[in-house]
Image (cartoon, rainbow, N blue to C red; front, side):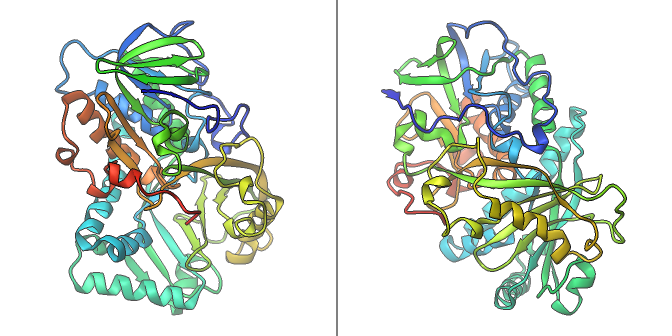
Length: 451
């Protein structure tokens, strides 16, 4: 199979996110001038998915004395995609659990939520094991509801799950509207949920793991774009901007950019653009009540912001989708990989208003943006990622299409991919949720629009 696609690749010179403002020494590193002629395993992409997969393979305690020769290929600088542009937190996503139960049943939802919960401990454990300073905090997160009917709906859902004895519901606390303002430090809330969460500096985690991967023998080629993919029975030939490499096994950790190299994913993993910001209050400001939790602000059933307080009182705040979804040309944010420009000024204006409008004691903080950027995510029709062997392929695997929630799924998914590639395991033997498996049936369903 030969594939070549000029569209859908990462854009050059993307906006710099808050997380990327101080580049790691490996940001533009290359192990040699050109890629080697061959390797055992090629991994395309150096976000959390690609780097964690390489880490799991090379640190596997059962690996043979001769480790596989792994080459990581990155079109831009290391970890310059969605992982380096996200909200910096992950949490039990109760709304995902509810939707999964409605669409696929209780058992499927239990698999998905259990997978989410495993991320929290897994990221904490690897940061501690490898001594990576990424400001990781095990904490909790509030889901704030401003719409009364939405709040009632979620309250009834959580209550029903608890009454049925659903195991993961034990981690969720419902906060009644009568006390939710007091508990959350916000204004005019109609109720809230408290769930387990982790906050971290994602770029520092990934680059810390990447340094460990190189210590374990991996090779890295940044600013080395893959232009063409050709698969045969023995290997995949990858034509890159720095030479051609023949890989016995290839892993596509390409998220929103997957269809550029695997055209069967056109319309299945669709790139879409989001906007994020860092808010910096005036230096003299000290909150009367420190924000120890992260937040999702659910303005209604469809729209929510994500908010992650930083140790220095700064705020990571992203979302504001209603400011552009129906008000600007859809091509400006849907089916695009252009993260070199902002979506609109209305999103930024909204970000600048959030702390003053919604948080108690922040009225005089002047918590306005000092950094705004965009990032490219991958949307799938069923909102689940594609993980496993590329359908119909002999020596290609992927983990991609994370719908803007990659931090909540990737690390343990990459462990599953590592087992599949290293030990030739079937997907069913990895312990990953069945709904995540990439199949021909899922490839047949195309995105009709933004969900």
